[in-house]
Image (cartoon, rainbow, N blue to C red; front, side):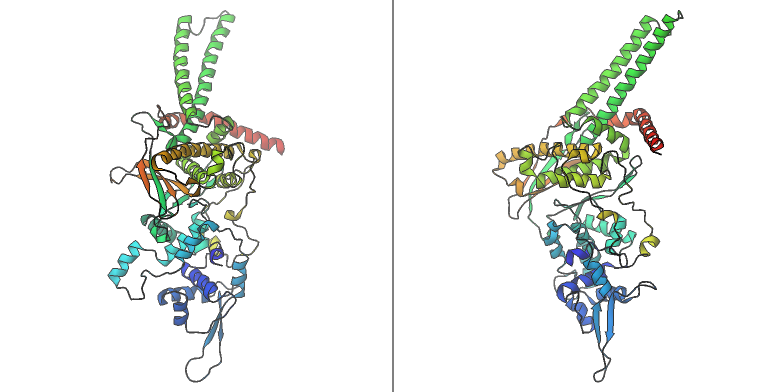
Length: 552
């Protein structure tokens, strides 16, 4: 019931109430009753009296006219002087609702969840803490609300400690906290270093799918009981606009977009020049005065040739950072029509996430040539499809998680019905058949695989410098590292972390990772994106309208 309660969606249950129910299930049993004073019960369940009272108020308060309380209270006959005793029991409806909740929790982080579930107290002792000391402890420790939220994040995290499927609305249903309170607690987890990076969600207007936020968790954080797990810490440089250089690690999405934009620009330039030539030939055939003299036409041709040459160079540079095979052309076209300039950072984080997942779960298979673009890892490509909301070729799906639910809509539901399915519970069948997924999904997988292969090659080079390293047993994460100086908020490096068994020697260094091209691809595609994409998107929308008209 420990991890099941972390996936049970009911916005009425506060973190304190959920904690009490979890400890009751563990220490007393969900079906068993208890006879004791509330103070004794709270202490038995590891709650302070204040925490217990807040939880009890939620569990015993009636949740609407037609809803039952979460705890049943039976008054016992009076036996002697004093107040009569009471027998407490979790309501049968609550126990059944939790028991029938689909278990979507990731089993990879049960140990960390159990560590967090041991106590809710700021101090490890039973001594009372003063106001000043309590304030200091709260600033540097986990309190019950952010502890529960962290447990929820871990329960929905992939193996490397990445959360990609939780919107704020989903967190509200899983924690019972308000939107403002969740935002505040997420900031606290970031300040403590437990969330090492948060990439905000995006709404891609041309794909009609909400992209939920991505959270990277520090699996080696001491508060998770994993201090000393970090074994590899390598800093990778990022792109430099000063020297017109784009690096693979932070520029692989820029390369894909630059390749698409430059390809469109080449086609547009050739069409424009062909139109000028055609107009000139038409005038000569009709015995009319030519629009341009031969000399002028030659000058125009040279200008167009230079522009085409520039665009071809950019295309060549971009392709140097991209995988050399399937599925390239269709994937780039799908990328251009589904995303705009503001989506690039979210897409890059998404590619990083899956590259790290490949390194963490398929290290040997990648060395041996498996789990490539034509034979993808079934779980990873299914996760990409779920995240992008593009499950099948040429099929559009509704919003994965709109995050636009109002509080009134969410609070209208009490104990969740068994058959009610939330967006995060929508399953995607895991298959390694690329034809089952859209061009965009296959392309994003190919980008992640390509990045993972390059980083794997770089990591294996460290084996020769530091001796044999068991990379296969590690979890990996790629984290943007921001400058510590207040006036320099730009990302200066990416940090590649490898989490191994505790006690390993830490390899920490900055590497001269040289997979770059001598062109600022980000500046190029952002500068030409709107000019050459408007017509392409118009064609795409016309095609969609045509298909709808013909089908009706």
